[in-house]
Amino acid sequence: MLTALTQTADFIKSKTGFTPDVGIILGSGLGGLVAKMQIEHTLPYSELPNFPVSTVAGHGSRLIMGTLGNTKVVVMQGRFHFYEGYTFEQLTFPVRVLKFLGIKKLFLSNAAGGMNTNFKVGDLMVIDDHINLMPGNPLIGKNIDELGPRFPDMSAPYDIDLQNQALQIAAKKGYRCHTGVYAAVSGPTYETRAEYKFLRTIGADAVGMSTVPEVMVARHMDLPCFAMSIITDLGGMELVETITHEEVLKVAAEAEVKMTAIVMQMLA
Ligand code: HPA
Image 1 (cartoon, rainbow, N blue to C red):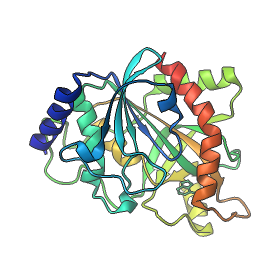
Image 2 (image 1 turned 90 degrees about the vertical axis):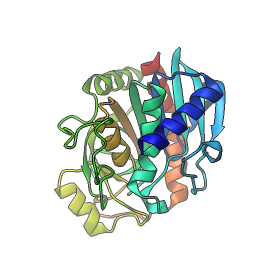
Image 3 (image 1 turned 180 degrees about the horizontal axis):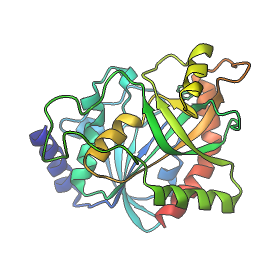
């Protein structure tokens, strides 16, 4: 693992000479940030040694480096999901690479289903905590002591200062923005009515199929994390409406403008 990480990071450094301060993992339909970037380098995943290759329609598959709000960022356009068939180790490999490139903070976005009855479709949620219900953990196996401890602390996985900053910006702009607990499931099926009810009962406000593996790997390396969800559909209400991937993408595109504005201001 260490050899592969060093090889991939060295390859990217030699191609770009770029040292990013913040890494950003863009989820479903949240590509609006890229349009605001002053792009300096674009590297397709397929050209990076040891990198997995993205399989989902609607996701780009490249690393983009440049500046956003005066901050040097590396953006992963296209992330990897467990439901695509990757192992947890494979899908979190890029997070470790970003750390090796020098990032000091990791930002992540995703689309999620809302269970909290105060939520509406199109709302934003700053993630304050998570519940890992995925069938595994990327840190299982021999610990890589050079990266972090055997038993990483998870009492505050999401940086509280970054959360407060995002909430203040959202409030000033008048956006509907909550904080909450994100439950991570494997997918690719959306939840049944009974599953939404179960997730609400155990304390989750939203549910999705990403983010948590990346955050576990980032926290292992003591990398501060900030993550935000777009609530694209509601489950666990009296009546669960049918969900399609197209609807999720449509709502995500509409809320993208708001999330982009918040993140831009945080970076500035
Ligand atoms: N469940 C799981 N993942 C999701 C959902 C959902 O309702 N909406 C968007 N991603």
